[in-house]
Length: 285
Image (cartoon, rainbow, N blue to C red; front, side, top):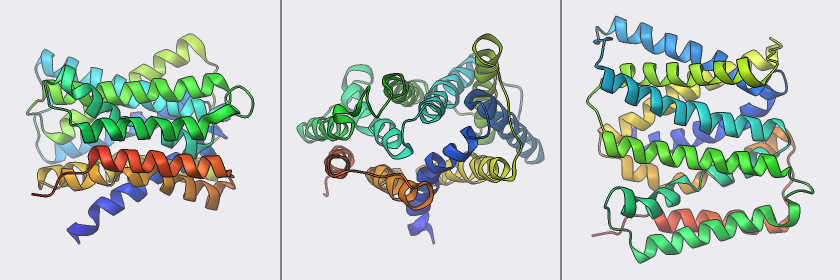
């Protein structure tokens, strides 16, 4: 059973991009995310209390967790949701932000003093070449420029969050850390709503089903599986199959959302997928 957990994670993670579309079709993207992470924070709070975890933490750990939440649940997901809401296909949004593993590898040498191999640099170049092929001449014509920029902002946010987490580390219980991160993400979106947007949510059946999917299967399920894999020394297996996210998302978007990919898109996905695979694949000993 444990052997299939990485693939369950990939399916759940990829499906999050697909269920984003029906959510933003029925709501303002930032209102939807504030709604989502309010209930995610509440869920982790209830779980933490039920399992008798220590809720009160030091100011340092609180600030670190809130900041991680702003980066990941706030800027990263905000960028993805906003880009999809203004016309970026979910498969392309997934491709851009899933370059995160190779961008992390590229920056790890400078910020974490980790050795970055030649193989990893090859993967970085292939990954971004593939993204360039997918985006091609569509930017500003078929793809809104601001949407592409938002997706790359999301990419930088999730990369920064990953480096930040690796840099600081902490010994907080997972449910407590996730709770405060969700609070940080929710607070970020509330601020965006108050200052910039005119929030609305149409509580249609479609919205409720898609939102339930993202709260239960993604925010609770996918993240729980990911932490389980890491705790059982299977993180490398999970990271090594991150290259499956863009094509899986593209297939789901074609199947459920009728999104169409041209030949350059397909070639670009293949090149980027190969790049992420090369950059994240562990050498066999």
